[in-house]
Length: 149
Image (tube, rainbow, N blue to C red; front, side, top):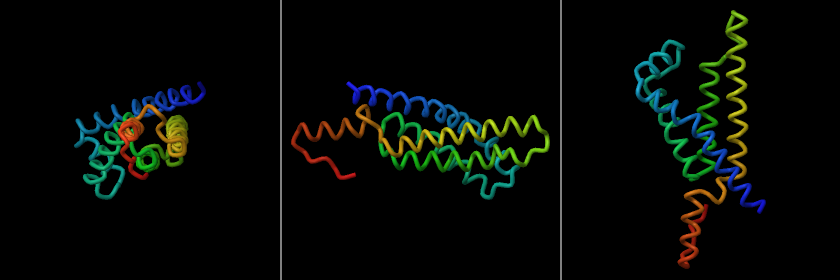
């Protein structure tokens, strides 16, 4: 019973984190020029390339989360994206206005909490309700050895 509860919790957590990233990635893709311009205005080098990489991370990462494939790689990808995005967009220590600094500090620490959740995913894996587990169980039921991870 506990294992089933844990697997449901892991699925719910994956879907919740994906719900944060995927709409943002789709929004950035539909407004790619604006996202690129924002990066350029902050002095980010190679804004065109980094905008595309950011959009790819925010779309492919959540899809991998939803499907439960490559949990460690997915976690590392989204952790890297979240940390870079936090440093670029939520560097609260650079704001002179106290209200803006407080708002950006909240966003920065929210992102840090997301990194914490992704670290849990890195350690725990996707659980039973994942494409990776489904493929593994289908292979073993047919007498086919599962690929090494």
